[in-house]
Length: 247
Image (cartoon, rainbow, N blue to C red; front, side):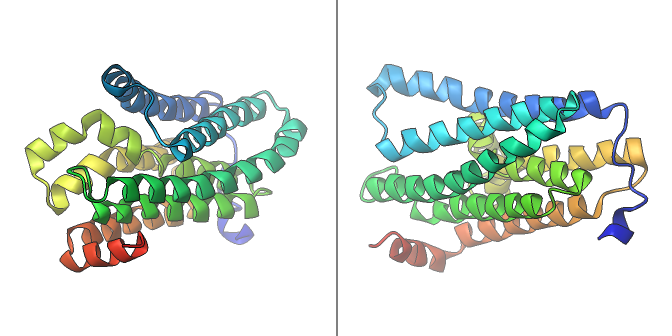
């Protein structure tokens, strides 16, 4: 890895604005997707969510807060504090995965037998958790390679933004492109893909090259996105998903 990344410029003057900018975009997507949805559901039925959903939401928001703090610490040169908080980040990452799996199971099983049931959709939810877990683990493993670490952490967090985008523009995408593979991919993953590619564009502009960790991470995300949507539209997957949900 060292020989492949030795020519990659680890720091650039624009980084002090770019990385907080990417984190701000992540917050923007989450707020645009979830705040209107929460307000609408609260007016209709109150905070009638399973406890597992509340816990997962709290853990995920904590992850975003920590990501923001860590980004600002690096921008101010407080590397020591950043590294000490990294222990908290490792624990939070594990909790994001665990609570995500539990919330997925609780929500999808509660919807079985109702008009809202869509068991095949767990392909998307499981894919989100898989990508986040693998990229976050890779980022922690490469924590001594600052350039790889920060890109993998951003990619891991961006991979979970599907839930924000589909609440934001999902209905419009389905209405325009249908409920098949293309419409499902556009609703779930177009926004995530644009953010992922945004990191690459930034690196090309500032470094004239892509970091190998970014390239592998982006391919990993895009590949699993297509697999998730292929599973979703495959008739046999619904049977498998029902078994996974215990029915």
